[in-house]
Amino acid sequence: MDIIDIINKKRLKQELTREEISFAVNGYIDGTVKDYQMSSLLMAIVLNGMTDRESIDLTDIMLHSGDVIDLSNIDGIIVDKHSTGGVGDKVTLVFAPLLASLGIKIAKMSGRGLGHTGGTIDKLESIEGFNTKLSQEEFIKQVNDINIAIVSQSGNLVPADKKIYALRDVTGTVESIPLIASSIMSKKIASGADIIIIDLKVGSGALIKNLEDAHELSRIMVKIGEIYKKTVICMLTNMDQPLGYAVGNSLEVQESINTLKGDGPSDLLEVVISLCSIIVGAVKKISNEEAKNLLFKQLNNGEAYNKFVEFVNRQGGDINKIKISDKVIYIKSEVSGYINRIDALKIGEIVKKLGAGRNTLDDEIDYGVGIVLSKKVGDYVEKDEELLKVYMSDKDVSLNEILDCYKIDKQLDKPIKTILDIVN
Ligand code: URA
Image (cartoon, rainbow, N blue to C red):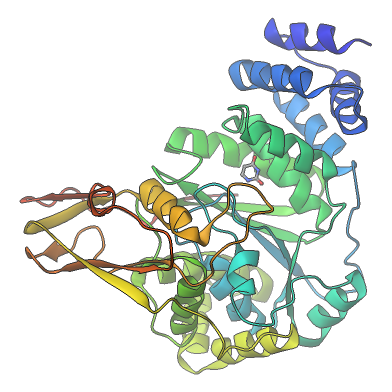
């Protein structure tokens, strides 16, 4: 077999066999297929797509490129969640302890932030002492003992995705439905849970910009899940503005704590409750309405927050030691009007520039910096009223760059919906 023939075949829009996909992926891992050849094949896939059969084979080949986690020693139904990446996306920090407080098992491997979106592991590591590296035995024991553990991805989990994703990131080949589907599903299936719920972000601050692509991605991910007998649910949620008010690691942990104490922003709460109620309804065999009531009860009676504290302590963290920068700049509106847009992508990029994100996985990040919005889309702001606060350290951002994120008009545009659809 020759990699050039495989590239040419995809360039000519022909369907690749399983053997050809395996030759390319495994050859890339062992170095016989070079970066430039893999980049070329990836670009041909971006441009010409893949059939469902090719996407399914690609997922399976990537899945078996490394460890597959065996969670059979955990009793009960195990839930995992994945987000396709958003700005201010602290959903896991609330979702996981909230479900765990109801006896549902959360065994989750999370990632670090890359690009303009944050990652759960960075957020958890902003809590002093928090250990995101547990052995597989410790991980399983913790889930059996307290229903929840969140760790960073094991070194050898889907190494094919690690290598291919890094290449996609620098070759303009991230935005492809079959490549995204196989990347996400190979990791989720290798992680071993029974129910996989995917928060598929849609909008200007997300990888997927429109509903049509979101539906197509959901369809193929649900189909891949069926092959491995996994329940896959995709919830399409809005990412046209940051989720909640806080963007930045420690600031997002603080907002999550408030939410777990029953005092969360309405959009964050809506996403969390919608995701959790599907799981609670399915596991406890109760109606969605009953599930929602149960979830609100856990937020209001302190159980969800107590579970978060127990989880943080168990992984070595101290909830009272979350460092937030004390260098705060207040930014006021230059005009009066309705806020019709807060560009999530630009806000994410500014927060990254402040030091909250990294350009390469080796960069050090500054946990205490970020932005806290004072207003959201749909709110009215007076001239000179506070629009947001910037928590900074030694890196500057320009006022104009921040104000450019906003569109403020005399008229209010159509309100934006938080939950766009559910596919399962
Ligand atoms: N998230 C992933 O894990 N992989 C992709 O390709 C895109 C988003």
